Length: 505
Image 1 (tube, rainbow, N blue to C red):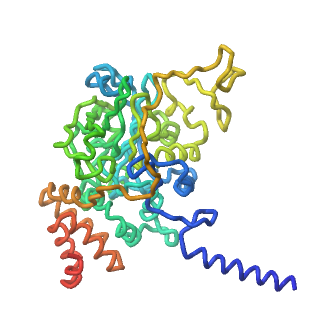
Image 2: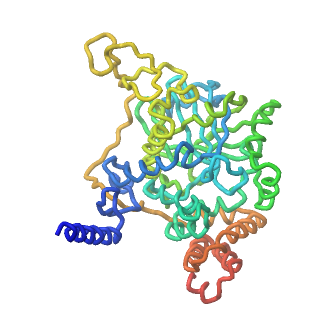
Image 3: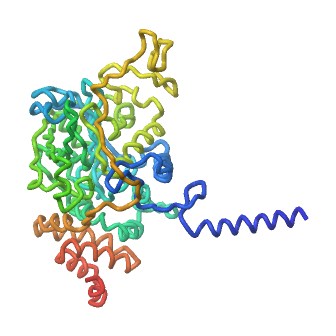
C-alpha cells in the first residue's frame, strides 16, 4: 500500500511538473505575469522594489559566476585626474563641478562586456567605460560604454540578453543562433546592433574610443530644481576602429593589445585624455519630442540639446597591483553624490539594485572598504561587521537616533529631490513612443560607403550562421524598417529569395 502511495505521489508530482512547464514561473513556482516590463509608477515612473520577479531575476543573475564578473570580466584600470571646465552650481550642487579648474582624482576601468577574463581584446563587443570620481563629498561612479545606446530598455530583459550572448549551456560555445533568436523578438535592439556591427564594435584601443553614460541622469541644484543630463566622453586621441580583418591580424599578433597599448603609452608619458560633455533637458520638453528621452536605446540629437563641456580627464598612473586595484575595483551607477540622481529610465532603475548586489556577492559586503573603492573622505556610517570589516569603529552607539553626543545627525540639505505622483496607477507596460527603428536608420545613413559595406559584411557573417530562416527574415525586416537600402543589402547578402523578401516588405 505504501509503495502504491509513493507511486501515486510520484505521478502527481510529474503531473504538477508538466503543468508548471506550460508557463514561466518564479523560483517558487508562482506564474509570471509579465517577463518583459518592470512594474513602475505609471508608464514612465520609477521602478517599484515590490516587483519580486524583477528582484529575484536580477539577484539570481548577479550570482551566476564565481569569482569572475558575469559581464565586463576582461578589463584594465588606470588612475588619473578630472579638471572641471566651469562652475555648474546653477544646475547641480555636486561639489566637484562647482568650481572651474577644480581637480578630482579618478580611477577608470575599460573592459569588454560579454567575454571571459582571458578573452582577446579584439572581439566584436561593446567596451565598458567606468569612471570613479573620488570627490570631496564621496565617490561618484559614471558607469557606461563606448557606444551611446544599449540593446534593451528594461532591466527585466538583461539576464535573458546576456544569456543569449554567453556560451550555450550545452555546448559552451557562443552561437549567433541564440543571439538572433533573442533579438528577433526585441526590435528595440536594432539601433545598438547596427552600431556594434559597424566598425565601432571593435575599437583599435581603449585610448581611441569615445565613452557614454548611456542613461539619462538628473542634476539637482541647491533650489531642488531638476535638469536631466546625458554624458559623453570625447577622446582627444581621435576615434580609430579595426575592421574584422584588421582584428584577426591583431589577434594573431597580440590578443591583449588594448591593455598593452594603454600601459605602454602611460609609461612613456603619452597620457590619454577625454573631454566630458553633457546634454541638458528639462522634463517640460519631454512631451514635445517624438521619442522617449529616458529610453537608453536612443541618443539625444544635438539639435535637441547641444553638448556642453564639463571638464577634461587625463589618465597618468598605472596600478601597482592588478588584482587588488583592477580586479577588485567595483563600480555601480547607484554610487552617487548630492546633486546627481538617477532618472526614471527602467534599465537604469534595475542597475541601481543589480550592480551593488553583484559587487557584494563577488567581492563581499565590505567591498567599499578596499583602497581602490574607498572614498578619499572620512566615512561615518552605522553599518557594521561582515567579512573583512575594517571600519575601526569604537563607539557604543551604532544606531540612530540617540541622546548621546556621538549620535550622527542628518543633514537636510542633502535630501533627495522630490517627485510628485497624482492618481497614477502602477503598471507593467512598454514605454510610450518606442520608435525602435528611426535612430538606427539615421545612424546607418550617417556612415560612409566603406563603413556601410563593412556593417553589411559583419552582420552577414553572423546571420549566415543562423539556421532558422524565420529568425533571419525577421532580423532583416528590422534592419529594413530602419532603412530600406540597409535591409535590401542585407537581404541580397544573405541570399533571401524574392518571395522571402516580399513577405518582409
